[in-house]
Each structure stands twice: as structure tokens, then as C-alpha cells.
Image (cartoon, rainbow, N blue to C red; front, side):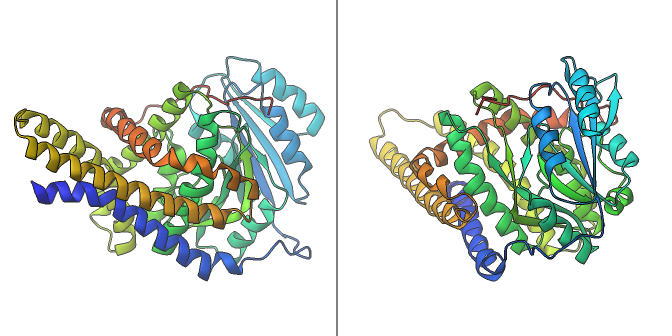
Length: 410
């Protein structure tokens, strides 16, 4: 029992150390040598910008205005209304007249993946930029991303570096720290391992040929970005992380909105674990197995902690004070070590990331909240999401609902 307990204490600490080491290696060997966009670089290939919309009447105008204003010379904009119940259709019709976008209207909500598939098959360029309907892209971003795809046809997608637009509440400030430190740290470390777990659905550039060879996005998976990432991994296409390619998005500012988002993300990851298990048995790639096992162990860790807690309660002896002191000491020591290592990881990542958004350093005070927030919330999310993944009905459209966009006035 003590050996099992030791695993549950060490696992999150070891993962944080792994991410710290990977982040440092990535920065020294790759990121520190990256340069600003070459003003003489002129792409010879075009990009089809695709926005799938469901109830985005309040945000879509800013996104399309931004895409239209990008200096990238060869582009088209395709917007898909996926059966919205608000005035998204009317707003897109107005924007079509103003910006000459391609507008596709779907009467029934059949999910983001279905909308992306329809848009992708009508796109005229070999590279597809998928952008969420609340997202603003930096002008340099498409240049950084397409250069990698043109230079290396084995890359299936390039995923960018999302930033937070709304930062007025405690939840949004904590997420600012999360994106600037933890998420960036994980992607840097996974790049060194050889496989980035997931493309960022909010903002990524795809090689259309890679999508075609993998039958595009899966319409029955709750998170199309995680699902297509693993299709690329298993088919031999690489995913590249491009930290210089920035976009600005809105995040949930209510606990309800954040909970709903994280349950969806977690469920999508679990669906992929279950879907690809048999395929992984045939894989002879240590790096990919490390990534897959990390996803599996994250679920095992949560349920293991719950089982250990129940077992401990059942074994309680209210008169055994030595037992209390022993368990309490282990708990406090492990919590201290995890918090200490996490803060090192977040601080290091925040410093590295400050070259892109220096003002995020002022949010360092929220680092003290994040270890508890991250491990506690994610643990609860896994408990709820894993049964949902088990009950997924294969072949049915994974429809979506309106996300919490936070304060749209910021």
C-alpha cells in the first residue's frame, strides 16, 4: 500500500519536472534561436481561413474584420453558420457583403467537425487556418506557420500560441497564467519528446493533404482538435508548436462556463484514449507511447486517489494518533513538494513566455492559486468526463453549444 501511495505522490511531481526539463531544452536549442519575421519572405501558397460558428453573433464581426485586414497576400475567408439559434446567420450575411467572404449556411447544428469538413472541402488553397469565432490573430502569425508547412511536407499542422483577451476576473487571470506558463510549457516539452499531444482548436494551420489522407475531422468526437491530432500521430504526420504565432481569444469568466469547457476537453481526450487503444498496440515508437501513457496515467491517478481516500477512511482508527500524524505528515509534505515544483515550472515558463507578452509577469501573484486550482479542478473534471467518454455513441454527430466568452467589452 505504501508503494502505491508513493506512486500517487510522485506522479504529478515527476510530470512537472519532466515539463521543466523539456521547456528548458526547447528554449535553449530551439526558441532562443527563433527570429522575427523576415520582411522579405513572400509566400507562394495561399491560406483558406475557416471559421465554424454556432451562436457567435456578438463576436464574429471582430474576427472576420481581423482576418480581412491581415497583410497575408493570398487568402480566402470561409465562414460556416452551423444552425445557430441567434442572429449569427444575419450577421454573416452582412459581413459577406462588406468583406466578400464565402458564406456557408447549415440549417441544422451537426457540430464543429462537420462544419469544418464542409468548409475544408470547398477551400481552394492547400493550407487551412482554422480559427474560433472569438479570435484575433497577430499579423505575423500566418507567415511563421505557413513557412514551416511549405518547408516540411511531413508536418500535418502547426499550432499557435493562444493569448487571453479578457483579464478582468480572478478566473480569467488564473487562465492567463495557465496559457502563458503551463500550456506553453507542456507543448514545449512535448515537442522535445517528439509529439505535441493536441493541436490548439482555437488557432491552427493545417496541411490540407494531411487532412484528406486522414478523412478530415471526426464528426462523432466531442473535441475535433484532439481527435485529429492523434490521427496525425498514428499516420506519421508531425505537429509543430510555433510560439511566435500569437492569437487573442476570450475565455470563460464564470465557474460554470469554465467547468463546462474543461469537462468537454477532458471527455475529448478520454474518447481518443479509448478509440486508439488497439492502434497503439501496433505502434513501435517509444516517444508516442510515452505521450499515450501520460494520458492514461492522468486518469488512473485521479481514480487511484479517490480509491485511496475511501480506503483510508474505512481504515480510520479514531484513537490512533500516531496514524493521524503519519498520514498528515505525508499529505502535507507531498502537497508542499508539488506546490514548490509547480511554482518553479510556472515561473520559468512565464519568464520564457514574457518575450511575447511581458505584462503577464504582473500576474505572477496568481501562481500561488494555480497549483491547487489546476490539480483539484482537473481531478474533479476527470471523474465527470471519463464516464461520458465511455458512453459516447460512435457515428452520431457531436453537436456543440454556445461557449462562455466572458466580458466581450474588453
